[in-house]
Image (cartoon, rainbow, N blue to C red; front, side):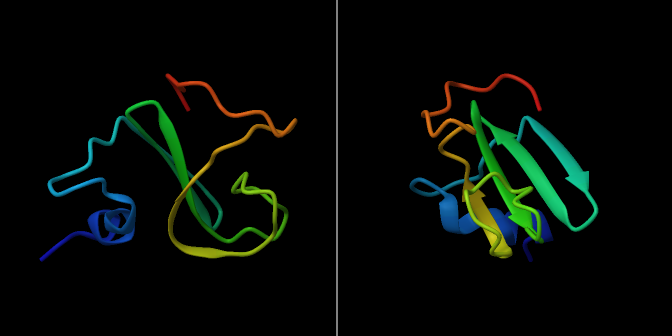
Length: 79
């Protein structure tokens, strides 16, 4: 039986197998994961804290593609 993180992360899996999770940070009602240089967020998004350019809550992890200036994010090494 998968863990909660495996369940929420699985929709973003590329191919089969496990995802490598390098770092996890959590706030009040939201979580951020760093995996292979990419940032994924999930949870409440009342103030845009997920970094997805909206205020819609997410129930599964979503890739954060852009920074505050709408530029593609480079490979991230730490969250």
